[in-house]
Image: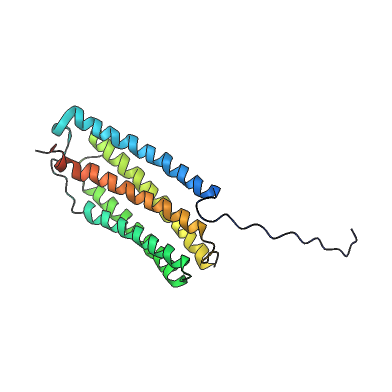
Length: 204
């Protein structure tokens, strides 16, 4: 090869789009692992309910004054992510960025409200088995929300930089899948701690 010859490398291959790439299966494995964690934790709650009945619950009728609206806030963030993803698929940059930013904002609001609700509880992490499970499960969920907000923020930064378009948006799909999982977990947590005492008649 002469000194004047320039060896031009071939263009790098684009990442696999859709649900056939390793990144998609990777996030599915992550979701399955985290779902197993929450399943075990929630099973512990129901096991205690079966063993001890209503006497085990510190609140016969848990208030949903803060938890209910906060659940709606997180579900609304999931809609925002879906709307933002729909925007990038259609080539709507404004819709895409707005949806991601709105989802991040709602996620942050959820975290603040959840912390404020923690402050109102008359029991703590070490007060009882119920308190331990409540703060452990809701705390793990809050941690997942924090991670989800960070992931969405990174995707938003990449989106602003122009990394995604109507053909290539796999990272947006992956981030959206994780965020929707976090929202589904919230529904399970809400049903367990706030609705099950009424539905199952464990409260007085």
